[in-house]
Image (tube, rainbow, N blue to C red; front, side, top):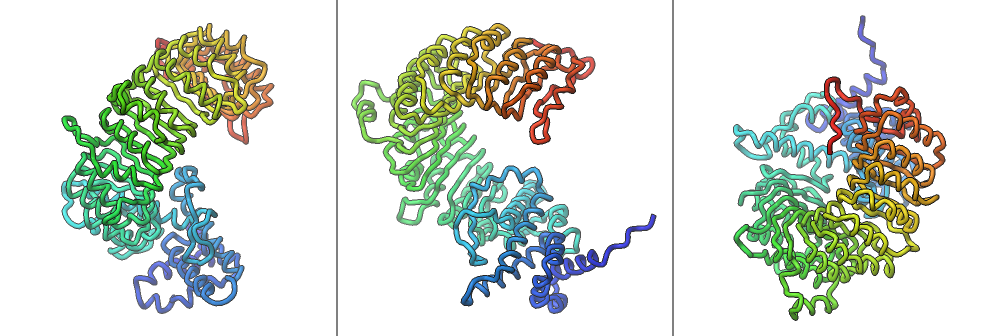
Length: 631
């Protein structure tokens, strides 16, 4: 079969692409297709220009886009407004960049949150630092540069690598993605080229330790970095590279994150010092995060003083996170004391996955220091999110925590999951919950997962919570072995509280608990999400779902996985879905392998929302593999 003959338009596009890409490298071609000729391309009729723009590879589109920006800037410098046609074509380029982004990274498109981006379009002089449409050109080249850095880091880790970071070669697949297979000069395969050419678009970068040398600071000098993420910083050379980079970008940096690093006191002091101008403690960091990185040596009680100064002087600091940092109780208390007395408007505080049992009990409760702390004006008045998950807090810690929570009058979200506070601890916190929910009505999300609670403690909590004008948004008591005895109180609570999200995964309801929930469930409940998975409810799970679907008109999502539901459950659920009048978008029935034995399982896939099936059915068990319904 003969090859398809290319159209005249396709041949023209190929010639234009080649000329644009190579024009910046070969003088003779550039003289033929210089800026005058590129300007002629921009003056093409709209339909032809759209065809050119949409079909250009990124490198060619970048060159043509620069011409448009230069032209807009020239028009902006002269009296009068930018011509509407030019403004429209500037928007067309943004659409083209979005299409290129979607083609190259389709899985990342939905991860982009427009609320996190500010449009700063100084180059075209159109708007400056205001919320607006996403700048897809900036997002494209930022993502491309990150791919280049990750690719170069893999090569730098090879034992055979020896030399300069800038000389690290970028893989053919990345180069082909921006040039569509056009012949490129050797310099385009070097990391330094991509940093120089596209660094100005980078706002957020993630750097592996092998790239954190002094050389990297010079390579990223053109960046206007707002967020930096460092991974596995462990050597002095790497620390020096990090500090130089931080010092150079301290005026634009807003967010800083360290993952799997060794940040012992001397290192932390050096890092924090590099973020402040010489002779000043003031910095502009808004978010500071340390994850899975030790910040204190095992046999040392030394606390990095510069870190405490950094936290206390952060006028713009909004979020602080220390997760899995080997933090000691004394260190945790010092952090809390510093933040309580600071002038920052902190919004989020996370001290999780640390063994800080006794962090507040280090001061005797009858001592003057403890009484003065509770009676002082110091507070975290702006804090809305507190996460103390997995910090080995016990019942005594919960009692002390109750006193400190009073110092957080605007708290909306509290997570103390994975702490063995037991019923005694939850009883200590009940007065706080009653006060927070009854008076200020701000607390809306509470997580008490895997806290060694029994049905008695949870029943006492649910009965104590007041009826609210503004309903509680979310409550999670998952992974506590409560048994069926909690079902009646839970059902009444759902009717009185107006709760929107409930997580009761793996609390041991069983068939008896689901039957009681079904019988006592109020006529109308406000739930939009519920997780009832891993409760081994059998057929009673299906009957409860049927009742729930009919009496929760606002229900959007249900997780009912791993409940050992028998085949006949399919018909019960189908009958309920046929009468569906609500907003249900997702029903997860996975890990209920017995449902596959029903002859009607495929009928569940007929129920759709906006063209997509509502029900997630379980995968059929592999032949020869016995089903294990043991806990």
